[in-house]
Image 1: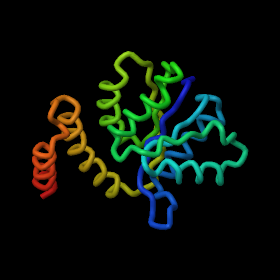
Image 2: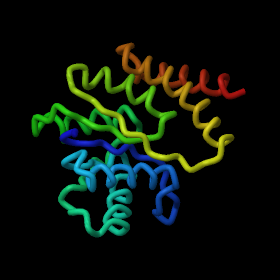
Image 3: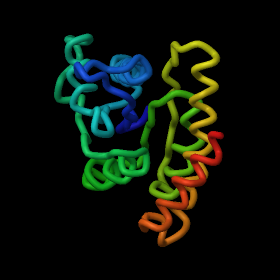
Length: 176
């Protein structure tokens, strides 16, 4: 059992409904609550408020007080940083869970190694539900995102505008 679980955000449609991979992440987080594998879940990223609404609507038997929202992170790095600063550290949690799809975990683990070096972490896989070709596209994008985030975490100027331009160019070249 973990004390707190971060459910990484994903896409939201213009009508504010969740894209399927995001919904699957929320469902996995609620499953952990239901099975008492976590005490509380935090919906991470800007989709967080919509993720919470989805959870409350689809799973009305789950206590609303157990479903929290980070709501500000616009990237996996920001989600993780905000999760640590606003939910983990203030309450002294040490056993942390993370929810996402398998193809996202290498990058999440890279980021977690930076923000949570001495914490006990457990990763919970959400179903994907997409076809093999769509998943393969996500894996290709994740490979670039992993390299980009590695540099953002390891190089002090990793968020400078020059570095961002270099990373943008690298991404364009990588996808050709």
